[in-house]
Amino acid sequence: MTEHRTAPELSTRTDAGIVTVRCTGEVDLGTACRLRDRLLAPIRAGARGVVADLTETTFCDSTVFSVLVEAQRDADERNVAFAIAPGDTAVFRPLHILGLDRTLPLHRGRAAARAAVAEAPVVSRRVS
Image (cartoon, rainbow, N blue to C red; front, top):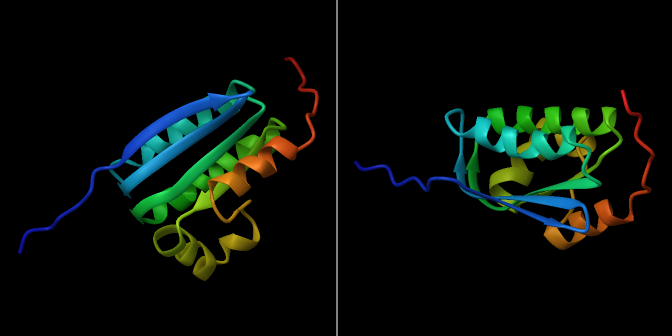
């Protein structure tokens, strides 16, 4: 039996200081680090906001959930608005089952996630 997997494709787009990281395909332990790097880099650089667009992610394992929790924590620590647009079956359903839908900033669709980040108050960031 041949396994047909769709390699993840990551793209990043910046518009008005808001970075959208779009992930399509399947993300697992072997590829979650790429998603982590794409999300954390703009958060740590002080972007106005970051959106994780997972609406076209067809599979993800628990490492992706750890990445999303880490990104949320980093964003909170740095006062960077963060939102997640999960795909219904592959991402939202397991997040809901795990109870992470109560702690992560999930939004229905990329437009709603982007709007939430755009509407977040701009907080002055401390310079160390």
